[in-house]
Image (cartoon, rainbow, N blue to C red; front, side, top):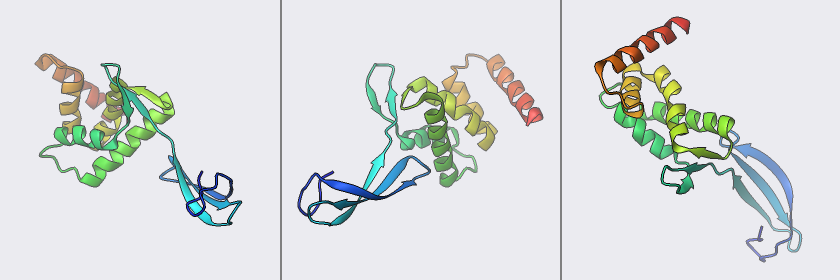
Length: 151
């Protein structure tokens, strides 16, 4: 880390704390040359490999945007969508580490969305799972009923 005052590369960590639900670390540092104190934030990056092979950083906003379409006309708040995106990110980090395939994101969305709104879940699942017929919807509705009976 470069000191913002003297540009020295020599500093020591005075204090560390996790922030953003453990995704980032806030560090207080002190320059060993000029004794200036400054703060740095270190963030764990989650990378997504797309079908084309391109790798990009995970975006909660993309999750919210995709789920928002499924929730159109439903009584689902923006805060609920943001919480869902955060939950999806936590699930992915726990199951896949720092690199995930795009299809794994869709799978990670399904359970939290089912718990949030069943109609939105059916809409999302119909696109994600490429439903071809009414029977596909019937099977998914039966699965929803079984899930509701268990939980």
